[in-house]
Length: 500
Image 1 (cartoon, one colour):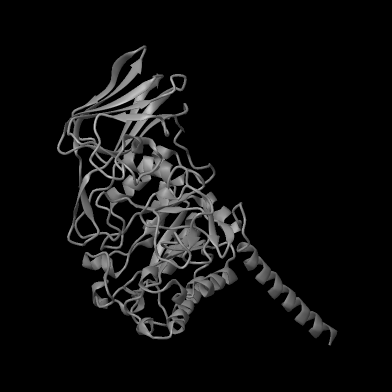
Image 2 (cartoon, one colour):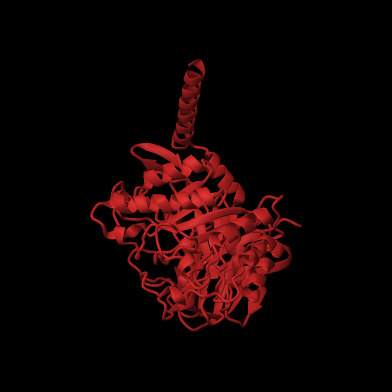
């Protein structure tokens, strides 16, 4: 009898301890909890979009694409994860189910999955196993929005919540430790109809250190769906949870500000939330690979986006999708690996930084500014640490000058140009066309302008100018000498990179 009582007491204590652990994760804090600490330490992951959309040249589908269309001829998840390892990624984030409802594992709760397709490999298991093999963390993306599952449209939201809980239980009990759950598609129902609290509790039951979040995490007012872009979230305790509880913030594919803040409110309490950025390796900004090989972004742009996105205890996942054969194309893998080698990434070292920005919020003057009532195209947008603001000139030939502290040296300049975009037929992918065709960079020393860089080639997505030695100057000037349209710049950063 004593043994029985002791067993009952032990069970109750363990249950109480588990509940306390979960509750502790929700306590308002100014420092990261254990799940967030692990996430911040990982810092850099590889996003993998792969599914039935891959074989139909589309980004979104509605659950009506035939199962027979999912037919990779050389499915090789080991190659995906080996690429991630070689590229220096710390974790792999796999899209296990997108909005179409197609599952990359054999789910007991739907027939719309790989087990019912021509190629029955359990992709979730294969990726999870490869992550264990290569010593990197495993994470999963799961769409809340399911355009295939009948219970999704039931008047009682709990019926579909139960469906999700069943599928998530499969994922969290059959595939080892999952470090992150990335939820998407929440815009299609009221936040209260998703059962986020139930999902969160289920996840924490299996792994308290799994970080959980929902895309579009934060809103301007509690209970109202109006948003401020992450780049403008530069004040603590001003914005509110839309989906509670969450461990980090998401807004795909927005970029946070250099001065990004971490404290957000729910029912009068403040919670710490880092931001996870998402970008595409593709220059066309596609998430699912297309049958036509598409160019990747230049390494300079990817390097600067890496620095920007992993700064200030934030994280980055870069999408590197496999093609219709079931492998990552060699040139795409080479771009990811080339970036990792350039950054000298290693699991045993902290993520590298971008040096000291000596230009941030320094006074700026522009020769002209595009007409605008709200002043959103003013010259000082060029160095405000936000990628959603930009200087725009009124004339094609334009000049912008930035004051600098002459005692601070610099050896690198990075410029993100605003470009005209053309949407491709899938509604997501796009082509970007540079406006600035010829330009110079000048610096003022002893009252005289000196040209340190001159180019007659289009500026492009991100121009990085690495100077052969350090300069000091009282001013820096960008002169646009030829442009196809009035030039516009998101951010011009003057940086002092430490010697390697």
